[in-house]
Each structure stands twice: as structure tokens, then as C-alpha cells.
Length: 465
Figure 1 (cartoon, helix red, strand yellow):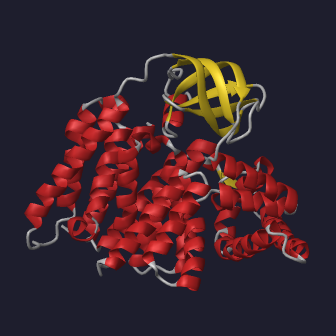
Figure 2 (cartoon, rainbow, N blue to C red; figure 1 turned 60 degrees about the horizontal axis):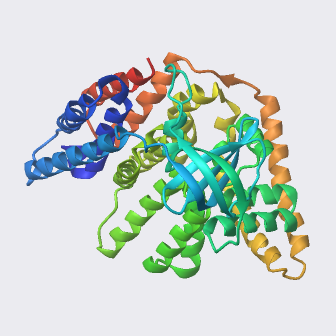
Figure 3 (cartoon, helix red, strand yellow; figure 1 turned 180 degrees about the horizontal axis):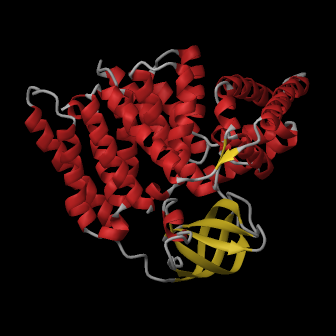
């Protein structure tokens, strides 16, 4: 059983994903039958030879999968919190974001968790302490399959429901991470040039400038603005260059950075993966990158199963699995970027309507370019915030680096102005490519690879069809 030998958590992740994806159609049976059957099926499909103690490990891992599936089911099927009335309640505004033509404010109350409230104005800034009266209600249910599911979107961010606030007023505050992030955002806006400020806020705080995000979407490089494995990896490589592999210090820096950026699902996945790698080094064990990605995905789904419906989580796991499998299988780095574009195509095209072809070209060198640009910009940003002499001139050079990227990306976009819309053939190809690269990593025979690609591909498409 090659999966059991090299990446047992991969089978756990695949089975949990299948159960969550088909929960709406199968109900509790998706977890009672589908999850364990999918786990066992993947194990036997990868069977190559007997391994010492494999049946004991198989039984233990199967029991673990069943426990995980029950945890996931209990969270997804749990009834929403009862509607409540708040009187003179206090809380902290943890997030403010545009929501169509209005604003969504996430308020973490002192006694009942997080709620989102909608307003025509951004009445309060992040980190503000407020006192208010309010009435809560559950999220609006979906009317049909194509509707946006606001309940799953917000519950993936630990928000319990919607709240209508009355008599809200600001009160004396206290330290909070949200307030610190807001103040840092304001300083970056004031003290650094426009483009540099937007990129630093994206990489430091997880805040996306709308106009900049629209440009990167046209270029097919939106992932460079989302804090994920790329940003976390750059930070850790820079830290390891200066301090070496000092596990405790790196762990503190790793999670401090992730929570500073807002702890998005993609950043958490990357953080858990790196943490597993660091812990493996302590015990003198070799960490399998594919198994680390799968383990991180399982931990996040156990913590919050609603993350499955977060596109950032899906894309992060799919891309990381593909990259890890290809590298460990010995594929050239030149093949990684086109492969990642292919495997992420079904989700990106299904969600956003199309994938720009220019992104395949730009992503061949964009990660290297932005690794350098983000490192230099972060160094200059720190100098500017502490008002180091002549740092403003240095930041103008950094601004030029980002302006140069816009010129390069714009030129490529003019030469290749085409996009591919969602279609069954390309989406099926992208879905099958993920399975193919994982099977190549597991060194499975061609016939087994074909069978697994067919079975998993059918299950994946049953979610869309």
C-alpha cells in the first residue's frame, strides 16, 4: 500500500473531501459510508506489496478517518445558534470589508463569539471597541444550487450569524491584534509610495487593494497577493538565512507572521506544513512534502469543515499537492508552473468565469521576481517606518521595481490577451492531472494510475454536475 507507506494522510484528506463535497446529496451517509469506503478503496488501489505491520496501521488509520469524519459531520450538521438580543454588549471590530455596494463589519462580542453586520458606511475602523444593542439572526439559506452560500462563507471565518446593531458607540479601547494591524496599515499608507504600500499591505497584513487585485487577475497572478505558501516560504527562507534552523525561534516567527496577516486558510495550510517539517527535524525524521500538505489540510478541515467551501483553501491545497508531488517525482521546475495552472483551472474558471493564458507565461518567472521584490520592499518598509535616514529615497527605488513589473505584465497581456472559459474537457483534464502527478509520486503502475484517475475524476465531477 504505497499511500499507507508514504502519505497515509493523503487518503484521509481525499476521503474527508469526498464526504464534505457530497454531503448535500447524501446527508449523513456521505460520512457513514462514503468516507470509510473512499479511504479503503484508495488504500487497496495503491496496493503494491506487503509491508511489515501494514494491516495494523491500516486499521488504526481507518479508525482515525472515521473519527475525523464524525467530527466534520457534527460541525456541518449542527444547528445555527439561536437568535439573540444583545443589550449594552461590548465587542471589537475585527474586520471591515467591502460587500458589494455596502460594507461588512465583523464584530467579536465579549460573550457570544463573532457576528457580521452590514452597513452603507464603514462606521468603525478595525480594532475599535464598541458598545451596542443588537439582534442576531441566521444566514439566509440558498434558494438554488447556483446561489452564493453566505452561511458557509462566513462560518468558514468563525462567524456565527448576522447581527443588526443599534445605538452603537465607540468606547475606550484596549490592545488587540486587529487594532495593531489597522495602525500598521495606516502607517504604510502614509509613509510608503502607492504601489509599494499596496504590496506591503497584501504581504504583511493580507489586505488587498481592489484596483491592484483586478490587475493581477487580468495577468493571472492573483495568488501573489494572497498570503499563502509563497509568502510564508519567503519569510521562513529569509529567517533561516540569518538564524539557521532554530526551531523554537522559527516557530514563533512563523505563527506571528501568519496571525499578523489575518490567518487566511492558505496561510494556515502553509504554516502547518512548515511546522510539520520543523517538528520532523527535531525527531530526526524525514518529512514527506505530500503527506505534510495532506496533514495540514486534514487539521484545517477538522478545525473548521466550512473551509472546504473557501476557494483560497481549495486552491492552496491543490497547488501545494501538485508542486510537492511533481518535485518529489523528479519533474523539472519548468513544468511546475504550467501544471499548477492546469490543475487549478477547474476551480478558478468555475468561480471567476475564465483563466487568462498570459498567467502561464508570467508565472514562469513571477515567483522569483516577487521573492526579490517583497524581500527588498519589506526591508525598505521597516527602515521607512522607523524613519531611517534616506529611507524615503530607497523606497522610491522599490516603487520602481513594482512599476517595472506592471510594464512587463502589461506587455505580455497585450501580446497574449486571451482567456479560457470553463468547459468540461479542460476541467476534467485539470482534475485528472492532480491525480496523475500524485500517482507518479507514489510510483504506481500505469493501469492503477488510470483506474484511480477515473474513479477520483468521476467523484470530483459529481460535485459540479
